[in-house]
Length: 154
Image 1 (cartoon, rainbow, N blue to C red):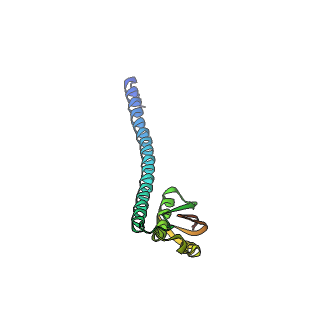
Image 2 (image 1 turned 30 degrees about the horizontal axis):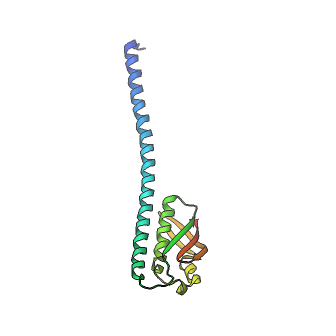
Image 3 (image 1 turned 135 degrees about the horizontal axis):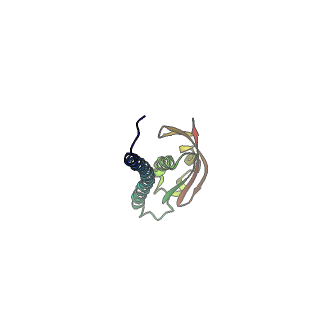
């Protein structure tokens, strides 16, 4: 059997500790950075949706500014979902695109039954997941508020 000197054992244990520490440090740093990147990605997607919504609303309002009538000014969609936040953002964006054509229209000319049928019982695919969309509640004033439930279809 080969006997190792005390100095070599000390050098081997120090080297092993350094390598193991570097591996653990890199792994933990990578987990932390990926978590932060996911959070920033969600925030960026949300802000993109907000900007797009504001631009559409501004354009529609500018078109109807001279009409002194009760018009639809904004759309708010409340999503009840089983999916993660990124899927929820994508679903909200999709649904707002369906209703953006109503911004600037006179409220008394909007039929609520037709509003619910636009997305009710539809299927939508987001990130390789399929969701069934059902409208639960609609509230219409100068703000169109729609409560939508989505169920993940497997």
